[in-house]
Image (tube, rainbow, N blue to C red; front, side, top):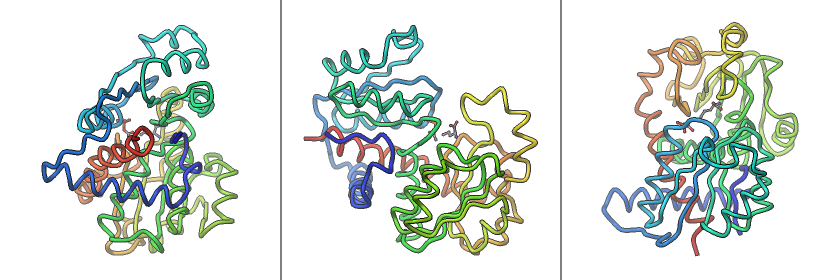
Length: 301
Ligand code: CP
Ligand code: NVA
């Protein structure tokens, strides 16, 4: 049984196969070719945090694959009242064919997978956002033709997005440069793995990280669950912004990506955002195609 709990569990070949299938499903959708690979199957989608893109793309994706999406807000589930994840996992496994979960701890996602008997897909934790990074890699490949050898620079907080970009980028042969404040570095074990398996740097020097980058990426300064720290984070992260000075040191044809939602004037200027809106909204669209590929890979026959 195949889960997508974090990208480090997947091989480079798994990622390539998923990106290829995502391209094919995108083509089929645009050309009106049916691709109902999950007819009769139900995906439960547990959300313990807000979402626009993840919720809509999984829900539409399941529908387009011929299956049924079931939105399960933690406010309405007994899990929100303290029913253990190990019981929820075993109950849901009797009813449905797969689970997508967006929550806080990575442990909850791993527990769901180990107690349940159906595929589990991570729709974002504080630690990782693998579905987003598959869509990101798909978008970069669409715009740049290939991934290997490109320099990917992430500017911002070293949490879920940075962690998953490191894994996805290094597995696909990209150079990954992270710029973040010293106390907000990505996961130490992942950084060690990246240094041993590819070209990886982590610095607090934004211009050094962005130099000659092919892709610049950023994310919010305060993630979901960190709202109380937002003011303090505005001070800590104030220089960690994609703006014209950063664009000036990157390659002249550098792409800009953002997982969204974006805060213009914080992690990215409105000017840079609008100049690269085409890439950023291709990236958002590709959540649908990439996740349909993940659903087929995890839940298909
Ligand atoms: N990028 C992303 O995961 O967006 P949502 O929070 O809207 O799902
Ligand atoms: N780091 C952000 C990503 C949102 C898609 C968060 O966790 O809120």
